[in-house]
Image (cartoon, rainbow, N blue to C red):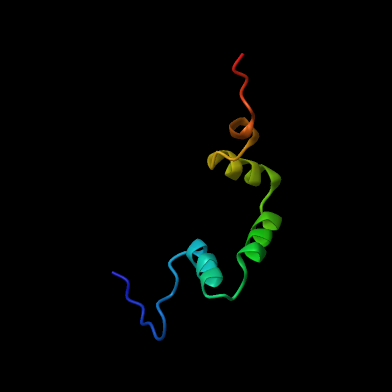
Length: 66
């Protein structure tokens, strides 16, 4: 069992929560956070993220109903 003494606010459990918290607290704008994330991620990671969220070309292409 691990015990760690904590003073002040409870630490954020993970970096994703911390990034969202920074936006919610007004420390950085959502647009700036998005820009930082996109610049950090590889193009393959961005492509996978868009596809996972059904925002890639295969989901946004107009389907032919002929």
